[in-house]
Image (tube, rainbow, N blue to C red):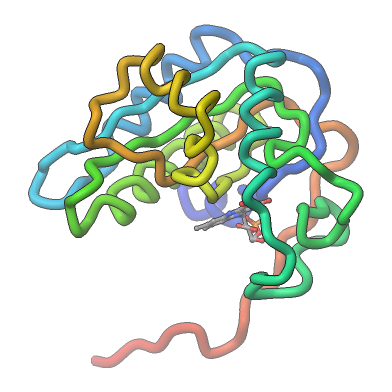
Length: 192
Ligand SMILES: Cc1cc2nc3c(=O)[nH]c(=O)nc-3n(C[C@H](O)[C@H](O)[C@H](O)COP(=O)(O)O)c2cc1C
């Protein structure tokens, strides 16, 4: 698919079937993530791909815990693919997706978050290109503040000075694929 067409087609999906992604798909997605640009080619990132539905749901619950409705920046995200902002009955930050990639970056590095979201963008585009559903999820650092979260970081051997900046949930869409979201007019200009 033409890359611009792919970018226009990609949507954040929050309704998933139970079908798991394959190991080959996860490997390709992680490879796409590490081939993202990084500030100064520092490659200060560590990606953890979790291809286990039960485990992913457990982390999705930890991700929802710090969600604070009183601090929302916007009130509406999507009717077709409602988020935790739209629907207070959703208590799972990962929306029941069977897989997730956690993107970690160096804590004291000024471009850590930018690097992480470059990797996340590569991942969602790769996933879309493979016909998989995905969505970028925030509250990375807060997800691991609990004792349970800290234990996971040790188990995964995440370097001590690394923090989670983003997640990308992955799986197969349940129901219809959402329509393209219209873009604001005058979002860019060309100066010649
Ligand atoms: C930095 C960033 C953080 C995001 N965090 C979340 C999140 O925590 N939960 C969620 O459901 N969607 C999250 N999203 C997805 C956005 O809601 C989504 O990209 C936006 O509504 C536009 O919809 P689209 O991706 O389908 O075009 C995030 C996206 C970005 C870029």
